Image (cartoon, rainbow, N blue to C red; front, top):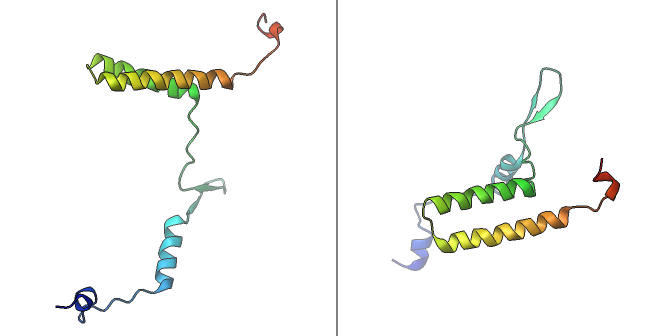
Length: 105
């Protein structure tokens, strides 16, 4: 059997139309809208909310605690500690300077 016969057998007839590809891609990325009782339209999927630095820090601390309690890999715990320090640095950079009188109110 030749390579050409193997790649393109005579008994196999494939008909790919560009319209079919285009329609299937459009269908995958199209969003259907539902009409609520009050007449508003709602998207089928909800937009993911942004995770705050405080939430990420708390989740990281929980994961590190789990690893420590279960006798996890020490290199992973060290890596989690480094990531925690990086997140704390990010949290400090996100703080804004305020007036000192605000502290006493």
